[in-house]
Structures are given as structure tokens and as C-alpha cells.
Length: 379
Ligand SMILES: Cc1cc2nc3c(=O)[nH]c(=O)nc-3n(C[C@H](O)[C@H](O)[C@H](O)COP(=O)(O)OP(=O)(O)OC[C@H]3O[C@@H](n4cnc5c(N)ncnc54)[C@H](O)[C@@H]3O)c2cc1C
Image: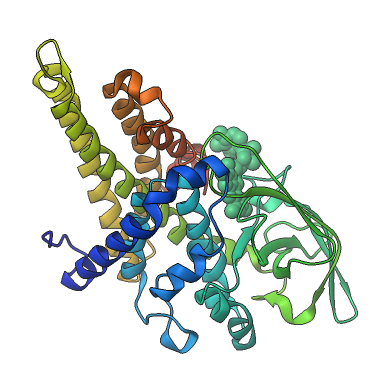
């Protein structure tokens, strides 16, 4: 077993080996096919659940493993080994952004109705915040919920939603006052049903995931599906951003480490001008730079993680980790692709996909510009 790096302990390393084994046996061999088919099968969810992997951080009374965010952090890093950004994204959306608000803000009845079956992999979740006219500017959403007898009627459109086609429920941000904004947004758990229509989007990477536009047309949502406090949904959005961004940073660190290992092996094997590529100083030095980038990203991310676990509110450190790792990951994938030469441009090589998949990082979950804006205001 590899030596542990704080904040991880031997227990986490054992979990890491077990997740790595499961991914190598059950997910990675299918990555290429799922990407080609633009879909990974829904039964991946119950199969992960059978290993306890959809509920690592949730209490046993809800069917979870009784662990914490450090156990989940191991999962976030290891998911990169699936080799399909789309598969990792679909699973990640379920465990990192759709279910945490239900655990944190949901009533006991909502937890029984959504969280418990989600941990079992029987229900798949999505988080619906972004709209065609509101992405970075979250407070500008216009999807509205009119209060009626016994619940709400929802009208509007969400877009770029991960699990947007397959999800059984969508944790949806809606405007519940005329003006919306910071004290006029609420969250409803919307079940897929009458009036909910999804259309899948074609995209540059993450092909195995179903990113979709979801329209809501006169969708009735019962009173008991209000998540958290009325008009205070903005707090709920902010509450999970730190974990979402940390999860993205951890995913990037995992993907970067794997890409480096594979590229170094390729450079040792591939011959040019009578010696391995790694025998040429330009390539050797590039690999040294890339290893430094992996290390720097890991240290920054683990520091933010350690603070997060300790109960600090490490907004600055998490924002820096998200900003640093997402751009660094894309740049590292591009450099790894370059070292592969023409092979790097071919579909049959993992690096072509990894480079496309990594491009989402500086955009999703709060773009580079928004991360800089948060930091600039704080500093
Ligand atoms: C594959 C994929 C999956 C996604 N999954 C989900 C999901 O599951 N749920 C969900 O709700 N959303 C999801 N998103 C949406 C994602 O979070 C948004 O795309 C992202 O927040 C950016 O919003 P936008 O696309 O509307 O860009 P915009 O907000 O329109 O921004 C466009 C550009 O302007 C820049 N910009 C915006 N404001 C400023 C400013 N004040 N100063 C400087 N520059 C600025 C941005 O950084 C960006 O470069 C997903 C997106 C993608 C591509």
C-alpha cells in the first residue's frame, strides 16, 4: 500500500485500493464504449451502491457508510481512473451536488423519500440551477414557482444539467417572489413526470454523461417538496459550492496524476532518434514540470480539504484550489497529448479524451473568472 499523505490515513488508503480495484474491473474497461455510445448505463448506480460508494459520507441510518467528507474525497480522486469524464461527472453530480442539499436541508420525510433510495442507487438525482439566461449570475434565474393550493406550479427552463435526462428527481432552483434574487429564490425537489421535458445536448467532452436542457411546463410540485426555507434558496446554493469545488479539484488531481504516470511510461517506451522520448532533454524536462504541477495542485487541494474537514470555512483556499487545478489539469492534458505526437490526436488513445474532458473544469462549478472575482473581493 502507498504511504499515506495527510489528511488521509491508512483507513483511507485501504478504501482507495478497494475503489481503485472496483473501477479497474467494473468501469474502466467500458469507458471507451460508453463514451462512443454517449451514455453510461443507469445500472452503474446500483452497482456502485452495492459497494457502499454512493453513501460514503452519509449516516448508516440512511443506508450510508457512516463516513465523512474525507472518505468521499478518496472517491472523487479515484473516479478519474474510470477514464470517462462523462461517467465520473454523472456519478459525481449524484453524490456531490444533488444529494448533499437533501441531506443538509431536507426534512426527515424528504430524506426517506429521496436520499435513502438515492444512496441505494434506485433513484438518480440532478441539480438544476443554470438557465439559458443565468449561469455565473445565479441570482438572475427566472424559472418561477407560483404558490397554489397544496404546492407550486413551476414554469421555466434549466440548461447544461448533468443527469438531465436520466434523473428521477431534480433539485431545482426557482424564483418564489416577483423579483427573485438573493432573498427570492427557493429550492423544490421536482419529480420527473408530467410537464418535465429533457433534451440531451451534444458537447465537446464528457460524452458518456447526459447533459440536458430541461423545460418545466405547468409542473405541479407538492408543498412537502420545498427543500429548506422558503425564499432562502441562495443560502443552499452557497452552502454546497465549497464541497462541489473541492470535489472538482480532487477529481483534477486524480486525473493529472494518472495522466502523468501514463505519459511517463509512454515516453520511456516510444523511440525517436535512436532513444526513448524520455532520453531527450526537452521531453524529460517537460515531464519534470508536469510532475511539479501535479504536486503543487495536490498540496493546494489537500490543504483546502484539511481545512474543510476541520470545520473552517476555507473559501479562499477552496477557491484557489478550484482555480489552480482546473486550468492546470487542462494544460497538463494538452502537454501529455503533445508528448504522444500523432497518437495523441487519435480516438483510440486515452489522452485525446482526457484533454477534451479536462476543458470543462475552468468553466463548470464557477468559472475561472468567477473564482478570480471571489478572490479579488476577499483579498
Ligand atoms: C458539461 C456541463 C455540465 C454542467 N452541469 C451543470 C449541472 O449539473 N447543474 C447546473 O446547474 N449547471 C451545470 N452546468 C452549468 C455551469 O455551471 C455553467 O455553464 C457555468 O456556471 C457558467 O455559466 P454560463 O455557461 O451561463 O456562462 P456565463 O455566466 O454566461 O459566462 C460566460 C463567460 O463570461 C464570464 N463571466 C461571467 N460573469 C463574469 C464577470 N462578472 N466577470 C468576468 N467574467 C465573467 C464567464 O467566466 C464565462 O467565461 C454545467 C455546464 C456544463 C458545460
